[in-house]
Length: 336
Image (cartoon, rainbow, N blue to C red; front, side, top):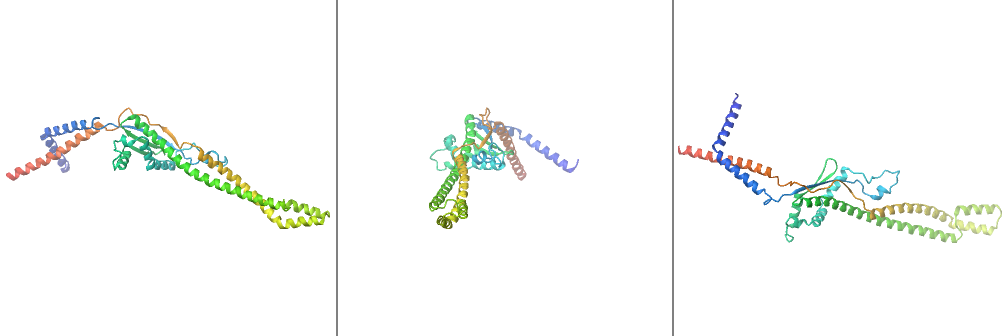
């Protein structure tokens, strides 16, 4: 047998002998720890909590109008598409935001539920700490999001888990609507400005028409034909003078009116889309698994508490008894 193996063998024997010498105190300490851990982990001391989980996929759509009213020839976002990592990460940010947390705390009256005094000066700190302890948000490897809630009432735990998803959906819809309203306001202003511009062009064209110029191309061709046929020279001269003064402007206004009218048509489409985004609501989540009331508590795990406490007490007892034994040996050697 090698020296290393012999050393290990003698050390193991020493440990066994030590435990054998002090077996009664160690048994008493371990038994006491087991009993105390059973008592202190009982429902009378630690209230059991039940775990409920809900899983959902966030949609990848950001605009209802872009997804539904867009040109079929142009590939847009599918309103039924989900599973993008970017969308999941954005939704996690919403779920972890203080704005959403405050809504959930208010909706389910978590201050009272977590036994926090309304007049406590540190209530925000305490509710935030307990919120993070009992409610967790996790992004799965499949780009879905899992919401987990621990609560003393299994029914309430499932309600809060499902409610958090509903609240997150409404928060995102609220943000989208604010952006859509800004877009609608800007588009309406542009549309009105374009209408005013077209009205001004049409008004100027009427003024020029009152001076005898209606269509530069047609009138120029007609004057040329009349001159070739020897028509009244005074009439022809009058038409030529009018065309010379206002013809170029009339031609330019006609082209500008055509361009502005086409722009107004495009703006009308954008305005329709902006109104759809403001007035329509589409869910931003696909719930894969709704939270249901648990039939078995998740916390505390009593067998684990008892096991850890018993082993810990046994190890601690060994350390204390080893110190005591070493002290007694040193004292005996000193007296000798």
